[in-house]
Image (cartoon, rainbow, N blue to C red; front, side):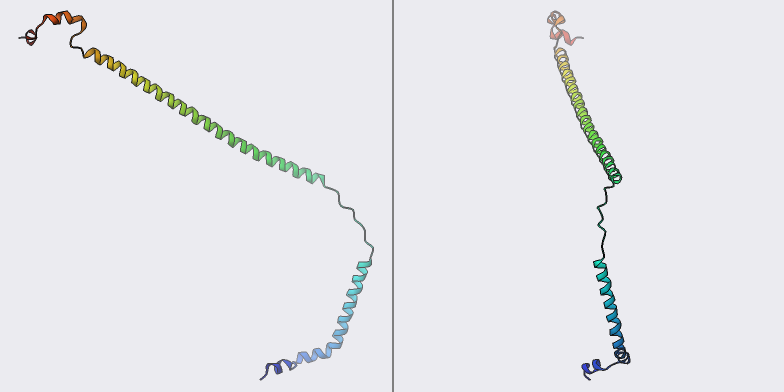
Length: 147
């Protein structure tokens, strides 16, 4: 069967529409005419010229104030953060300097202690103290081995 033949067959609904077609065409024509006449009437009617509305200064003022408050709050937070960072850097530098001074003092104390110990060692290392030298010369090695 040919598809073209199937499409050309009229259904019962299509037959009823063909009978209504003259009425439908008349209704559509009337509708089109009424739309055209309404459009013409709307285009040709006089219109009022409206002046641009004035600026609402109250709303503008509120927005400006809100922006100022927001920027102030934000910049205050940024400034506070900057101050804290600078204070932390200064504190770290102070602590480092204090530790350096303590290390230098400890090093100096060790050097002084080593110098003192060297003096004590040199004083103790002598066989006979200088005050007893005359007596030491009187003694002989045989006498020192004693009884």
